[in-house]
Length: 533
Image (cartoon, rainbow, N blue to C red; front, side, top):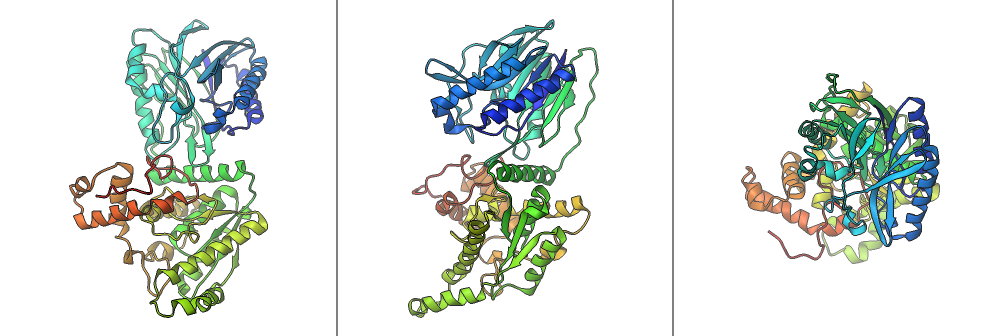
């Protein structure tokens, strides 16, 4: 039995392109002698289709496209994720196509409804588990969430299946690949059958799908694995007598994050029709990593940097900003904002003369830079990449309509300490100091007033990031965080900053999710809220 796992990168809503891609992979699998070719969850429509599923004409078109796929599925069988419709109900479905006909359509039974998943909003759960005979083998089909359910595994025990196929659209986050491998290995051992897992690859808005399609032997050993963060066609021959010893190398957190961010950024730019991006490069660590990710994933000719010094910009950061652009081969434009800033101060002088200098004057500088970035975007059609990181966004250490502007937030879900790890990884990967060592060593600063440091407003990131992880990602209470060894006043202050800045996060650009719980769909807190610890 020779099975092909078609790990494709579909385009949400682009039914014709997705259909043509599926057909091309069917042809490739046929040429390679496959008996069965498997596609990911909702491969025909892309994942997640969200409220496109509320459009009846979208559902009908997806069914018409499936008919075109059926005509090509001759000489081998195909499993294709699509949206099925029965009367007025729709289903997250997997079509088994054989000899140009739909032999069966399995409807997903376990519908996830947490985090980024809203499947109960759209789909009706299926009612029957299918068991198929093919080429002398028996197998069943499951969709994404189901392979993670022990109830699902228990329902298959004693069925003497040769293999279990799982088609997935499983979004990436740090640690997800390792956790998934344990689940798939355990399922194979419990069922004493091969487990074949076919996952999407690609970026869709804030989500990234890592691919990493895999096959596990009945002994729970990794028998074959596809590429990470790329399309692939994995061909595997299933043989119970063979001893599988395939091992996947260990991958560090920063390497996984780098791959996910590059794929998420490249697909967002490509799928939304942009040609180039523009980034404000300050000489600080966040913009350094953002411009590096952009140049490495999009190509240096598709990245334009703006260096916008103010009266408070140090010669060190100014020099590093230019040096970094030179190191990457990125074109940059220098726009000094001092005269613009002075014009603002002059215009406001009748109103501000009695007050002390405070955040108003600081934020004016950030908003001037935001205006300049958006002007370049409007004039030349560039996508503005936001450079804010998760630590800052969590605490509201960012300026509305200033450094928060942008069409896409590359580091939105990347904690500050991980930003530094990414910088070091980029230099190591490229074999040279693209990001100057001075950027890595300089204390972080917004440089909006003399001698300013991030620690003037925030705890040191070595303390802040672990607290944010416990509170934002794991929902720990104040007391439970204190039990981890943090001072109560420190924790209370961090929690207050997170809770009182939800209104800012609602106005932030969409950004790439790489942690188990990102702001946005993962964490939906009310802005008007009196539940404070």
